[in-house]
Amino acid sequence: SQQGEEDPQALSIQEGENATMNCSYKTSINNLQWYRQNSGRGLVHLILIRSNEREKHSGRLRVTLDTSKKSSSLLITASRAADTASYFCATRESGGSNYKLTFGKGTLLTVNP
Amino acid sequence: NAGVTQTPKFQVLKTGQSMTLQCAQDMNHNSMYWYRQDPGMGLRLIYYSASEGTTDKGEVPNGYNVSRLNKREFSLRLESAAPSQTSVYFCASSDAGTNEKLFFGSGTQLSVL
Image 1 (cartoon, chains in turn blue, green):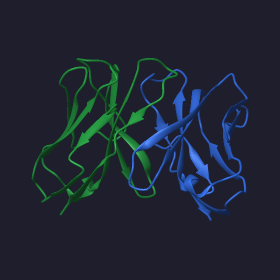
Image 2 (tube, helix red, strand yellow):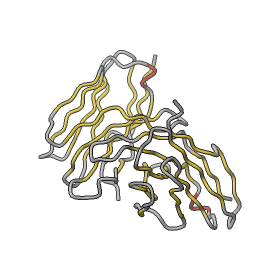
Image 3 (tube, chains in turn orange, blue):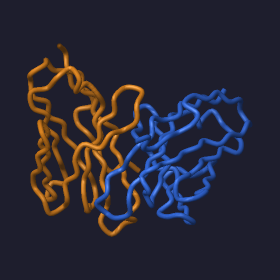
Image 4 (tube, one colour):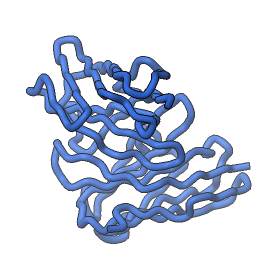
């Protein structure tokens, strides 16, 4: 069963705008990760946030985690056409197998030049 | 650095045919995974190998078998392909541990007619 659910399913913005994607999950987690997938390619890891962290930054990416609401958000600032991709959240459940990473269905982001 | 290499990139099978998807990683990772990606379903874990010599079922193992040939290689076999196995297959690897990220191959697009 899917653990993470991204929202919205699709997002279209203009270059230079900020993009925000949300992820909700169902169980307690050890960490939550965000991945990017360009069309026809494999997934690429973007950022990992641990369950005891509330916010993390990496370049133009900002991730927040609210374990009380079981939700996370990914913010991409000053978006570029090259940011056009699908974005997936993935969770590693606490108490579960250390080797299972469960992915959501993804948000398709389109950045228009 | 090659990272995670999957072969073939594309394959068309007839129902009932068998085939093996190959995966190799050159990052000395302990853990390897096979996922399938279907439209609207996100990525679902088929099988994983926590370390050389071990394999375990994921979320959707039926109709598949795997072999962890050595630390580098992890193959996925379809013994009798069915149209429901039409999908994009991704191999991934990670180092051991709860907070490790996955590295993905570029995928195999499989069609079963």
